Length: 172
Image 1 (cartoon, rainbow, N blue to C red):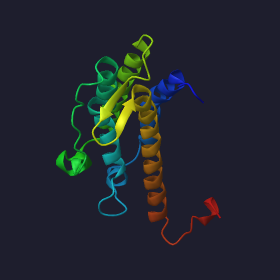
Image 2: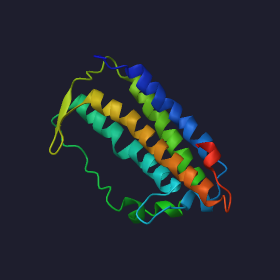
Image 3: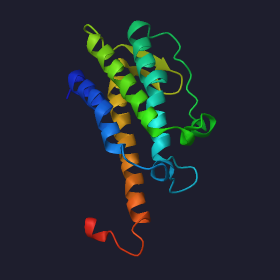
């Protein structure tokens, strides 16, 4: 496909505001803070990251690229962010509410853009040219990557909690 389907990407972003909370509400603290291995993120840490990204990454960088592509992007320091910010001690419901509110606002902002130039590009010092359309596509892909990560945690929990019983019937 040669042109961006911005409307579809924005709709996916907007749907995530309701889908993520609906997917995770009802999990207990032990489930949302569980990590299968040291160095891996829990469900809560993934959700905190998604909430922070709404304000610190995609929208500011997309807005900057559309208005002044030569402007420096705000720095991101993701190394050790979960520990530094105490992600695993936060309240999941508050994090999900924050994410949903920010995501809905960002979807409204995206829909308010009048004929955005998706080809407009910022030159990243390590990645080279990143177009506004690349950022929109990456935003939607970022959601999918983290939904996959959350799903892997839920699978891990199911296996952890199965005791002596096998889950192989789910996928022989």
